[in-house]
Image 1: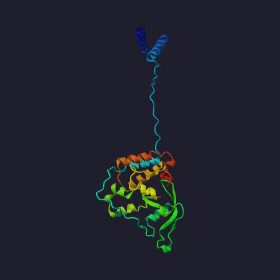
Image 2 (image 1 turned 180 degrees about the vertical axis):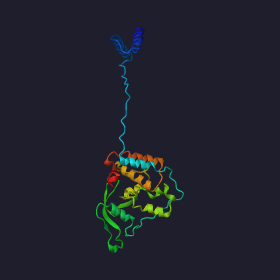
Image 3 (image 1 turned 135 degrees about the vertical axis):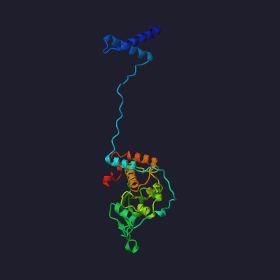
Image 4 (image 1 turned 60 degrees about the horizontal axis):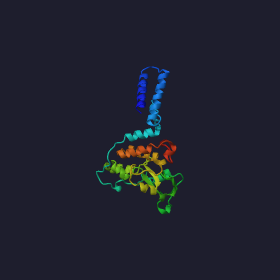
Length: 264
């Protein structure tokens, strides 16, 4: 056993010495190979192969221009903890109102704008001929189709109670009313399945998101759009949830029913 170890030691010395030359003679090469063979036998198996080239991880695919612009907008939002200097009162956020005095209030305007078929109104003798009663709406987060307007809620995409905690509590009544009836930004108010809207409630993205990941990109993009327009704050956990949803925007299907922002 000692003679075998001594032989290994001698051969190792020869191998190290051989490394100091720019080229190995055939004899030295054979000695190095012998050392490797003996060492492998002594260890009970072949010597592991070492690689000198480092492994390079594949770079992630760059975000599309649409997603990059959304991430820039998200990065520009003010980060702060949710806070309210006064208690939330839904009545302070007056809706639905008839801004343009055409007898159709904000709810009716959204139902008309988002119906994919002609809408019908209540009969004149109902004294409510400006009220939409039927049309064809597609739930943005489920794809469910509705024809009865009573099955559809108009969702404040960033809920009123959440807007209150994100800086809106300090707004004057006029600004709260404008937010609650924002028809200028199409994503502020959305015709949504009643059941889904009520399940969402006032929850932010770190507490609720569409069950189908195909809707995550649109949901996150719309959330950022509303917060940016109204200069509402975000929390860090909220930002992380939005970034997580935006990271799934790898193709047009990830934008749900509507496609990227440019298609809406």
